[in-house]
Length: 552
Image (tube, rainbow, N blue to C red; front, top):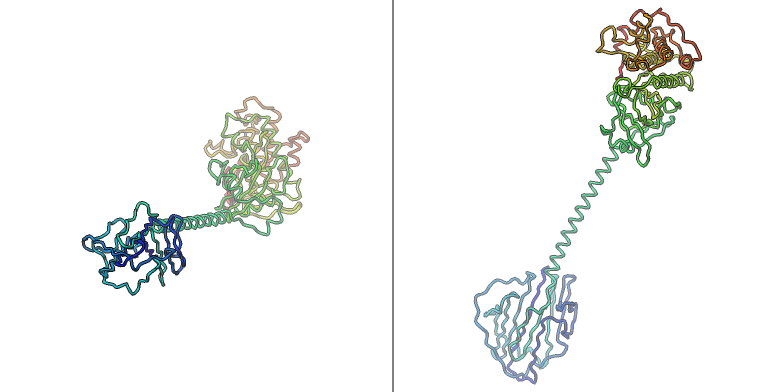
């Protein structure tokens, strides 16, 4: 409820004689000696508090000794004339002055009220003829009594001026203690508003954090299936890969092909640099490629194979984590960076490394692994420019001594063996055919098929074959090499490329023999013209409709 705050000027004029004239003024009650009762108290700043808003109660404050009212000397005073009345709210919470005057001679009781900053009005708000003789004893206590009843309010007395037999001294308003209520109430309201604002901000922050955490949980949610338990590669947390690649930003993009993008990154809290392959969502073979790569390369170990460090699955997103190859892929040095051209010695070393890796896949592991996508862009170079065969997204494996199953034909045009279009079976021999094209690609410095070249120069293997038939096979070499090559090695690689690219699968050497030839442990077989039929790269029209291509 609203507090009521008042001064009281109590002026009693009695017509009886008295042996004493009571006269005191309290500009605040800090030094006053009053008898207090109920919840009345004097506050530290000198306010006389009769009640407060904490509980319904009573409060009394009186002088400690009674005053002699009867037999006092006769006295009177004349009141000044005043103006008209103005409204004054007793429940506004603002300080009010009250003058209470009684004249025994006239039997007149006047009560005058005014705001604290207004002088005493000339007209009282209450004036009544009252006979108090029967109510006043010889000696009586003077003070205040307050009760709030059912309404909890605060009653404070700021000052008190009292006079028997005369006019009470005016209070010194500048010396009165300050009221706590308006300021405290304002502070309380401000505190409540501030608390509500703080609580609202905290609630909002909690909501925002909750939304972020939920979205983060959804964003980084991964997929786990039973088949993953039986394979070896380490599973990476999607969040770690996301942070490593800075959210798969374009500045970390190493390359993109028909089956996905590859990003570089550094794993959080480590110095390990990795390459992350993001398998394309749109690819209908995406999951099959992913599982094949997990099954195969995850357990393969060879110095010329790019090591698969782990993988991750998130919804339909497929991620593979490889060791990072600082010098990128071989095709960039053969076709796109003539200023960084590889020497023949480097090329020959890369050829032997890839041959060793392919021999391991075909014969050196517990199962036969058919890579199905051997080409220069899938050969990655380490810091020593050693070649490593990577990207096993199309790989298939089967037991030794068994026939491979018919599959959807995939690969890159120019590296596909002729029989694939008819049988649909990827074998070690089809890998050898692609390796033969790779040999010619490295030795000649051009792609297996150049769509913009003249018709007679469009297919690389046809061009090399014509040079061989003419007895000038070295003329097919990369002209950028000049004379900086070893003739015997160049001739061997070109002829071996033709042999491995033979249209008849039975005429192609196995990788075991290829390795021995490259190491000069076995002679190079003679190339037979039987079966070439001029255009050795032709697959026949019936094969192309069911072929899935990857970018070269």
